[in-house]
Image (tube, rainbow, N blue to C red; front, side, top):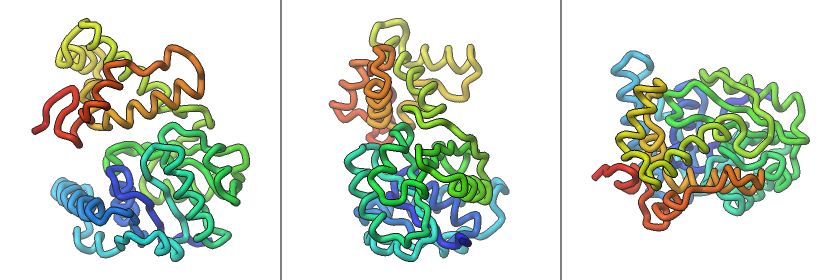
Length: 282
């Protein structure tokens, strides 16, 4: 089956980035979100991102030409036209369950759909559908337009044909696909999130200030961004959700979310998107 039109469900940071990359790669895109304000923010984000990429010579096509291939809608039923769908809604099992079940009833039988989940079991998500053989994980990295990696995760019933199609699509989108097994957090977040969580513990215990912790990791370990600044970029609520998935999945105390991380999320200090996290952005 030739894939011409890609549906993206969820117009947040990841969904808008995926839509932008798909459109830049020449695909028609249907970007769906229940919140029209989120769609407006997504459009502004894509415009700004494309302007920067064009200015740096990384994209040659005109911005408006690329965005003309993106159709924005609040109606999930619009995804009926899609040849391939990527779910990128909030990292919560119940939210994803509702979306996946609705998509399963909408999409043509032959359509493959994937989840951009960063940590939840693909086998578990596939069980919410009637097409577990045509479902798998396609975990993009943030920011999607700049990061080359895509983790590809097969569920227990994902077919070899489905994997080959998704891998080929990732490559057409200019990404480097890497296969990861279906364990909590896959490869990226099983390694990254405990490091961020440990940095929060170090802050809570007074081992160093946020600036000191981040500087040590940048200058001492050659990381481009410190773990606390990175947590602010990702969103502290997302970091907490992933740590809870790891803790629940492995039942190992080494994955226990730091109490300070939980407290900050409860206070609404979510990082850049809320204007305050480990650093202030107002």
